[in-house]
Length: 338
Image (tube, one colour):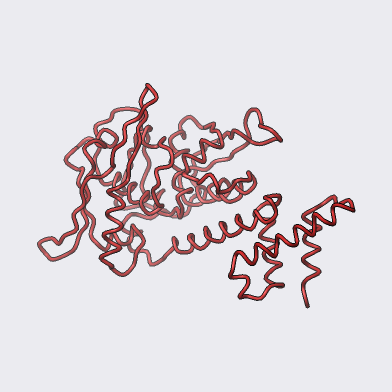
């Protein structure tokens, strides 16, 4: 499917390698669109104007609320990057310095944003050490992890592979240290989720495998990504088509993220012995056991699972249990009243 007006993003490698920058998904997407609208060879294009309706769509808020608009623009102006130097220090400055919300000569509202002077070398007049991609790749992605993983691997597409420490990847994705502590959870909800999204919506796809030495207890420390060009993606959309889409994918994604966090919390009731997919099976059983009013209270669900986990450990103290998760399932299944 041909796109009538395509936008190209040119991004310096050093900007792409920055660790967790505390941007929301909407702010990351906005920054990608901002970069696609400037001309890196022309400094005078640093001020970018969006119609208010376009800005609302990009930032995922519906009916205009002036306080929400102020909070959104103020948050954009507060984004700070830390650029490391060769001596182990760094320089810190804002990405944007000014935002105007006003009307044009026809009375139409717009939002105008200007890059910070200190950030200009990251966005303009660079000749090497950058990569580029077409904006449509970013417009169908639905989470921070998907968008960041695309950029992290797209930068190395010509090389065809990238080797990353798991901790380094987590930092690049901006994943909190308390999230996805077990690798199998990280694999399911980050790596596999990104793999599926990129192959479906972008011009690259990837596979991954453990690489090099493992840590204590067989812990996977390093991953090798093999990156390939992808021609079997779904029909791309232009920025104009994205603006006119009548959908709210981020709300759905937010619900999914909240449920994942709930399951991660419940994992702790079993001392993180079981994976999130396994805890999801336990939770599905609880839907048949606990009343709805208790299911809505995470602490009540946690306490119930903890009691059953303690029972599992008590039984294991006097009998041999070879498959502990299966045994816990049986304990819960005995509670179901048909």
